[in-house]
Image 1: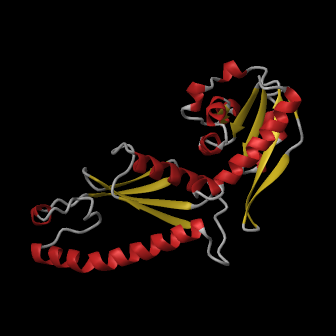
Image 2 (image 1 turned 90 degrees about the vertical axis):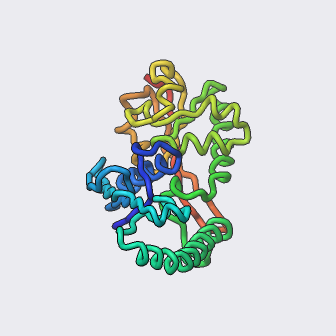
Image 3 (image 1 turned 135 degrees about the vertical axis):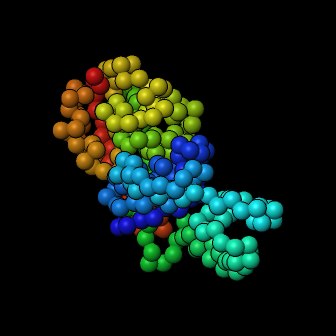
Length: 260
């Protein structure tokens, strides 16, 4: 699928949460096999570049004295082409009501779907990109971790086998957040990218531990991918997130022993 992401600013030119999420979202979508085009703004010259397989088209922000005196910032005119004062003013007056109505309809339908669901319309296969059923995921993983602890003791580390989404959401939605934060890590233990988890849970300090691995893709928990890092693997198992009787997403988990 060809996907366009539009935002007035981008990482790392502007270092805020929205710009970082835009960068992570583009990375996830490209990794899922989509063709991603990011249309964004810049205070520098307009340019195009390909970063990690994602096409970034940066358009120079429009700074017009007539517009700025009316309290309209360059963010509000992102993507507009410079024209004469009258045509710019007329374009802004005509575009704003239509834009407002479209945004209200779009976001209203989106939030309604996330909260109540729209009949016949399913959820994306990439649950990590949509805030749906994370509480159910946290509840199910709490039950699995309790069962594993009852068999092997309390020295258990839960590992999300992606960059950080599984680990972060699992820690947040656990019934015991203080404990889950201290026992949840990421895929850097198996050669992936774990961002801040690489500092919080250095690989050399996890030697010998029992791990509960969580992933959206069974291939991330495949024996060939794991066997060089552990001394023993239990069978791969599957769980399902359900909403109103409908399966939202399947996830996979596996207990491994003797991390090295």
